[in-house]
Image 1 (cartoon, each protein chain N blue to C red):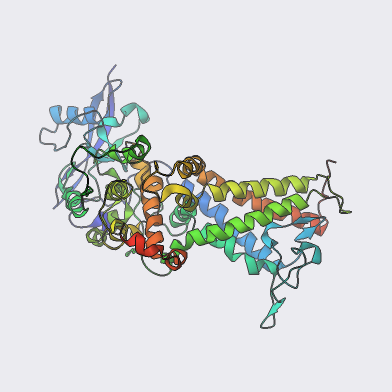
Image 2: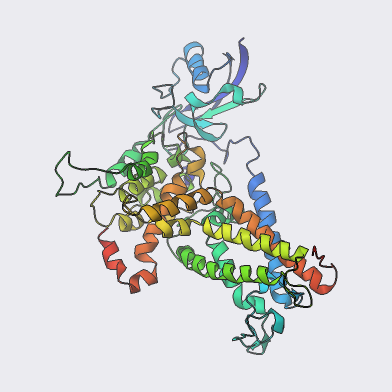
Length: 252
Length: 266
């Protein structure tokens, strides 16, 4: 049974824009991306929206729905009150290109700054073996679909454009944590780089990244805080310094 | 213009478009924490009504000052002078830095007070009012990295407060094997403090989180797994233990001042 839905969509580009009201049919079981597509098909033929899988696995349809960073394909219209107007805007942490599409290239630049996995030289390809319990730990982080909702909601860059140059953001802290916890990774100084180059010290643990993650990755508890503790190991723990362990830690 | 109002971003004049009651959680957090701070400050300076009938307030334990009631001290050990620079020092002021430091640097409380007191940010996707932000990279917030030190001191305090709970199983005449409402209050308070400490992120890191190879350290991995289970509820333990400690202090104060009678079950 179709009903009418009041929708407000942000339309514009980097120079100007604003919220436009539309009324659109919505059917039972539909998600916000469905009604955006219907608006595009019937009322706003030039509406720009990025999407791909419609299954919550590609991370393309990230936008802000009623002010919250969410995937449009995973947000049921039925989760809102019937008379509620749903407001849809582009991600507010990144430069807007057109309508609901933003330029997320910041994230790809940050991805390139994270040093890749370094395989032990003594092990030939195919010789490496890992126990299941070691695999499981980083498996959680591999669920990331790179929707960048965590990057969008993080106030360090969302509210402070100037921090973008020195802060990698939650998505890349889970990448760094995954590599630092990898039993076979041999790269030196990953912890020190996390603090001094990727800006993990700027995170103040307000856990918004965890709240918005559509894959329910415990970004703060399982990646950022453990990395902060690892940084404490090598930089702020006098007992470890006295014990001479710091020297060994530096190699990790 | 910075943040969500930066020139390249979508032109939206509202600081947030959230329609839910995002302000409610930080408002409640602010109210509860602020009330606790006011009460704890008053009690820390009061310097009285912290001991009665083998019950000692957790705010005053260990009682290390020469000003302490003799029964409240640990085996009569009072290494700290009652006055410093002619200022009468309440016994609570000597020790409160440790539990206070543990909670102030706690990863959960950081979230709570950064949001509710400092509004950095007040809630997710709600623009914060500050023009500049450097996080925990410089003084004073870089001191948050001392959390594990407060955790270690906190464990010592937990042992002492557990000892206090055991001592409370005496009747006013000093005979063992009696249990009062006060005993129950101190047992609950010290137990919740253990849960709060053992669920701490620094504890999780220390027992096994810092390892690269879980498979090479099966015992530490097992302990890490247990602490991880507790860690899921760290926020709850933070609140429950805070309220339990506050209530334990209120209870001892009321009994010590004669306002309440400590009922004995047996």
